[in-house]
Image (spheres, rainbow, N blue to C red):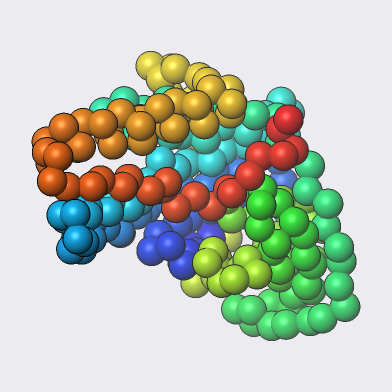
Amino acid sequence: MVLNYTEQLAFQSVLNANNTMSFFKFYTKNTDKTNLSEESDGLKLSVVPLDTTNYTVQFNKSTNVLYTLEKDFDGKEKYYTKEYLPEINWKLEPQTKIIADIACLSASTEFRGRTYQVWYAPSIPSNFGPWKLHGLPGLILEAKDLYNEVIFKVRQIEFVKEDVNVALNQSYDILSLEDHIERQDKGISELSKKMQSRMGKGVTLNVTDIDRIELSFDDTE
């Protein structure tokens, strides 16, 4: 089964899933944003790097481990983060909705710093969904957070007879989620110092944090 999603942060994505495995892939369309403004003490440069770290999220129920393909902040090196499949506590709701001619039910949850409402299809016996969302009695066809900053909407569903490939690229390192967060924060700090040295003393540089889907990691502490 293959699903094509659109996502509010300017991604195209595809979910390939069956009853035991899922492989979710992002295609980014965005670019980094840079803003210049004048202040009394000189120019202020604000750089907002795009979160393009997530390329794939893959999961195999037999191991209960989730792997996310990441890349260094400078984009030069790719690696995997490894985490045990996070538990998501869903609140099942009575609302119904038709998506792609399929009857869906609603559910909500708080996960990694965001509140989500999703629509899942009980008639499709897979408890997967886009990105890391999972654990409902039916495939998730639509999801959005409370502020509409993250929105997944299915565009196309295709039922195919093919294996779901969750094999890892053996040439990439595997890091814990905690090590990945530390690596990304270090990359932001190094970029800030490098750009500040190029700009000179007359420019105040502010490299803001990347726009992440995950805002907190309380469940990993």
